[in-house]
Image (cartoon, rainbow, N blue to C red; front, side):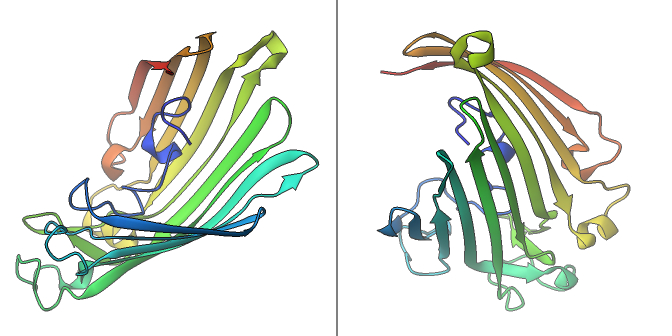
Length: 247
């Protein structure tokens, strides 16, 4: 997804910050290698130094990810089919050590890595319709260091699906309507540790109105249920607008 022209909610844009962990600092040293043996296939390898001291000890507790992308053209319609996996070498603590381990990132019990994988698909079905789906999952029994204490990772899986319809049927070919729905699934450990937990649900609807070649306005609506994994949390509705200016 592209948050500048399509969905605004992060769950419909990427898995980073959800099932895929983010760096301790937004800016960090990293590299990416890309190789396309044929037009149909692309391979990527990504590495990053993701700890707080990432500019000092670049090669300690790094993050690695690899992705294989297939880009078929089926009956003239383009698609992208991606499979990826990742490994976070930062210290993680097994949940059953909560209450035993010290409040220290370097506790000897905190020696586990976090792993995950996912798939991402988008496919054109006509001149008007493009659909997408995404699934990813990670370990379900780990806690991460939040800077002051060990915090249980609340979810281990997510999935999203949706589509974008271009405005050709109503003679607005540069306009588009998008709709998406997704869920973030809580871990069993988090459910046992909390009262009345429930999976988070997300939905988003937008209309992008193109005023001219370089300016588009979007009206966007988002709905969130069970925020924070709490079944008693009030539903959240967000209405927003976005202006995209291209130079």
